Image (cartoon, rainbow, N blue to C red; front, top):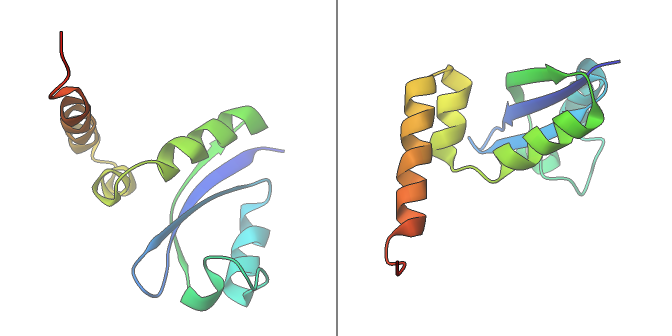
Length: 103
């Protein structure tokens, strides 16, 4: 069974990134508030706005962690499928990390 990484837009306009083996079932769980102490429960309803399938758990896990570390702007570029903006934002953030470093 493939694994999916997904991004939800919550009612408060925040994003939630997750990973699952059964996307349809997981979405139903988020909508129902199954995870009472989870991020999405008090922010329902949620809307699936992006997903990507992977063949292995490891691939999906790495992608989920990568996306969770991204800025809102970078996530929005991914959601739009705007690869130019995604690269530009990535390059800008790399430039900020290297500024001020010696040598």
